[in-house]
Length: 118
Length: 423
Image (cartoon, rainbow over all chains, first blue to last red):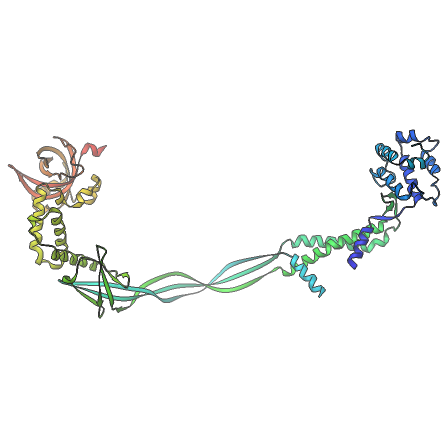
């Protein structure tokens, strides 16, 4: 029993608690807007002002009560987000522009969430 | 029970190297140890024609061994394989793990918001990371430390002190001599066996008339009976007399040369046993042999003359007692040649004449020698022309008269040209 508990502790030490939907939403907006912004972001979004502020405002995820709704539920959003993590989990890691293009092509609902045109 | 199981598990992981070495200690003492080992049976012959008596003597071999006794230590060494490495890993692992676990409350328990993984989770809090590493290090370190402790506990050596003996030398002596009786077989040179003849009171008396052939060896319980040198000579003499007795005694003149030579040989051997009893016959036989040699019968020289393969072998087989050459002091001894009869000589001189195909004259300084050449000798085909320088080895045979000339006769065993010798 003790050995099982020890194993769980070791495995648990690899990750922390689940982030909220609002945090996930802001994380993607932050990654997409890290300078230099990819061409696809510039062409598919009619950004006015600050990129990140524009996207968070359009998605309305500045509020912690934000939750994902169908058809873009939390699971779908996480799957769409995966290509953006290929360069790393850290929130300040800029995604590759090819990965951004792949995300936009695979997930038009995500583009629409942030006020873009798929 | 659980502790025993853990110890057993650790002992199984703790591989040990076992070595055994032996160290010779000081010399403790020396002593002589008498032993009796297997001996045998030996024989001694005595003969009084026509009886031959074999005395059988059993013996043991008394052996005296000079023994040196040493102290010796057999050392069994047990060493843990990799105990040092296990100890290092164990100490570091357990130490670091314990420190991390002990101080983990000092680390923040807040998740790492600077990172969100693909499943949507924040990065682990530093306290959880410290606890995970601490447990991991303890998992590695504790067994390693356990293995190291078990290995160090089992490391050591066992010394077993013993005494060893070393035989420095030994000497054997014949001992416990006793008369032995039993059946004796006679083996002969045809490979046949006669008998068994019973030995009684340690002796076997044989009558010449009851023997079929000359005795080659005596066999006692499937082993040849060893004889001393005197007995071997006596057996040869007895066998010679037996041959003379068993052969048809035809007149020497009527015998073939081969039969004559065999009979002469047997008579010579027999003479030492029967002496005067066969002296007259031996004289007749030798006179006939001499007559045939002088008549050019090569077979009368015996088998030895034909078997020689070189001049050097002839010198070795007939070692010269005199050297007859121009500067030799031995030349003067030819004045009394009758006393030199039968002696081997080495002659170096010049061919002066050829009196017959087998007799020539060789001149040494101012002395002339008749040289008899055996016709079948391997070197006799060589042409020894007049005035050829030659050297020969042979036997002096007294004075010989050929025509009007009288000179010492040398029966050549081997002759060659001197020029050939110098090449």
